Length: 507
Image (cartoon, rainbow, N blue to C red):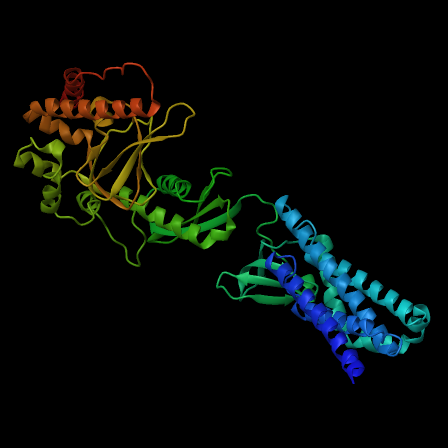
């Protein structure tokens, strides 16, 4: 009785121990990422190995020859499959670390593994079952023909997949054109049967390799060079084409993602009795964000047109007088509203009410989008900006060094006084950090006020000197130079220069 129990318990313990050890090793391999997606194969390997070890421990291999041969073949093929899978994972990691994740396509790796497994299976059958493989293959012609006919569609996809992998018209990560209904999609994976593509709507489309091999493929990512982006706008026909084309070019160049080379090209596409349609062809470096970049370009065009008084076309012909155009550039603000905002500007504290009302009839309101440059360092611009809403940063660049942010300005602050009053180039660049609304005062708007109030030059001179000294001190602090700072020009000398400029204008 004890002998019978021993013959039952001992093989079971060996089988259970083998199964537990193999399952533990497989789980460890999954945790470190070397064995993934092999749940069925891992279970099969553990069970087959447990059965084989159980028979071996009880010396029952000779008593169960057919079962032993089947288990030996199964275990051998399973071990080779796991080893090939681990080697494939290590190869993928090495290629990814070298920056070549798609150097060996998955389909080619799968075919290589399948060939090795097939050869292993044939060798095991010949070795364990003592069968002549050549004879078996030659005698199974009819069976092979039946299987071939049943799997002809699958074989077509495999052959088409091999051709695609060898030619490589696209790779995972590329954007390709699928069809008119789906549009463009990003290639996620190329397998032995099909490719998986993800359109911009978020769904995943599985396309058999035979269909891909037979249709025209448009690859937007093949060359690695910038990709063309087109936007079209229709404006009122009263605006000169040359001016509109220059504004469109300026707008798209300042938009996010648009590269300077190749240079954007703007052309007139169509005329009607009331409108002119322009098309802008520019280039972007990242096709992944194509819809967002196209929307940003159109948004930037709106802001530029709004500031320059360019009107989009309507279905009716509208005749606009010059004084009406001037009022439209104030965004439909009433003079009283502009006057109220001018009173909040510190620079204009000394002006009388009549002088402020005079300015409110001549100034403009301009909008700037986040990221737009309001003023460029080094340019000659005779405009003073007063911020009524929003926030900007002031940057100064020296030589080839990165630009330094010297200050931030918000509602109530002004900039551009040196260029307007002293005829100097911009000493810094000003960039909008959020959507910003400004009051624009041009140099010739101040000439009549100076003729009536000469003390305006003194007030402006003091403010310019204070702003210049503050910027100078900040830059000296950033450079950490152990030298005495160079003194800024005195307020009196600045005042004299401002007085000369305003005096020339008032003549």
